[in-house]
Image 1 (tube, rainbow, N blue to C red):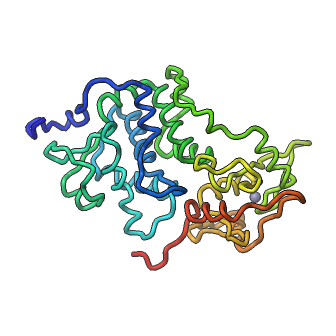
Image 2: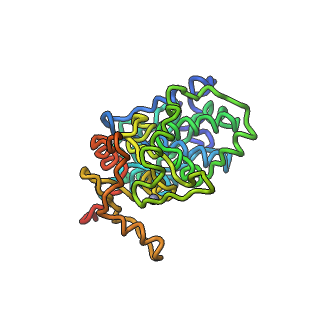
Image 3: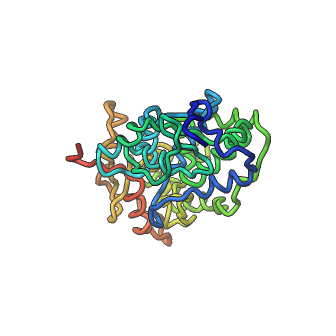
Length: 327
Ligand SMILES: [Zn+2]
């Protein structure tokens, strides 16, 4: 292809031909990342989910880096691990924008010349070259089937996040999974049964904590049935966290959501941490701050408390640290 083919409408048409559904799901399930084992890598999945939302809304996934930078960086800040500085937090979209697999993604400069994945993953370079990306035509063709889009989105969400975060992310990128399921053909190819939670896990955790939130002690019931009390993984199920009581806490629905979001954390001594990024004006909102420094409720006798190894994972990969001094 020559630079004279530089028609913005052409971007993404490269790599024409067809892509089988199975191949597409394999690519989506195998996004590579340079990070080491045990570290979360939600950058590419979040860029893809944002692109799915764009495609669902407009019929095109084409986006310049300038358009994508703020919303995608925000998604990574909200749903990814903490970042070292404020400067880095503003351009977190650059990494996936440059490195998303080229079988899926077509990245070009303002003249229509392809940009390789060897360019620096930095904002000035991408803005300077007028970088525009688009999912390749065969990918868009597949995503035009709402059932395929729903299955691909679900695969990414299940592989990289928790059910609570999945819901929040869908709302943020504008994907209505129920609508997509209704409109789409049924496709079960993306489901990996080995990823299902162990049966009885939730019940075991709730029983170990006597159906009480390990953070606030909430133990509400409707008649005889406990309500709004859930089994929370410390190291996420999607991130190879085991379905064991030593990797779990019974938490009320509020504290479960705040724990998955990294507002709440735990120290190695099993004391509760509250992120300094958390803000609340009302007494009800400030009740979360009051948890800081309190010990977690211990499980009932014969159950081991949560394992420090899993606590450390959550602390490094989920808890929202506040970096003072970052400019
Ligand atoms: Zn609670």
